[in-house]
Amino acid sequence: MRTLCSSTLIGEFFVIGFAALVAMKDPGLAVSTVWLVSGIAMVLCVLLCGMVTRPGGVALGWALQLALIASGVFVPTMYFMGAVFAALWWASVHFGRKVDAAKARFAAQAESPSTTPDAA
Image 1 (tube, rainbow, N blue to C red):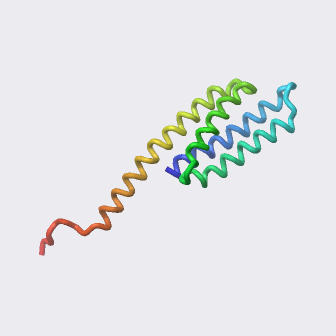
Image 2: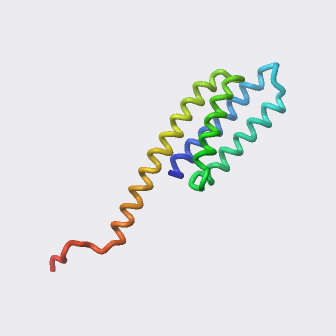
Image 3: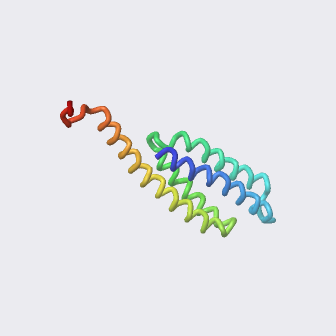
């Protein structure tokens, strides 16, 4: 799960940075505020890569997805990009857990002694 979720979060890191460049052009927003908020979100993306398998990591990821969608108030394209990344986040969590379960099942099978008799 960690690999899939981390790749989604790194993608979001770049999207947030590009959205900040767009938001800078809005005369109603202070450039320092745009970069402060975007910078915090970008750092959160990177930190969350390491926290995704810890308790609360997935929930923080969902909070980040909601914030990304909400940023559409300032950059309307982010409504769409936020929804896309929320779908990617769901897929990363859902299929990542399936992959982790399969890995654990294969590891358990490898550790257990073989039940087939030797052909000697």
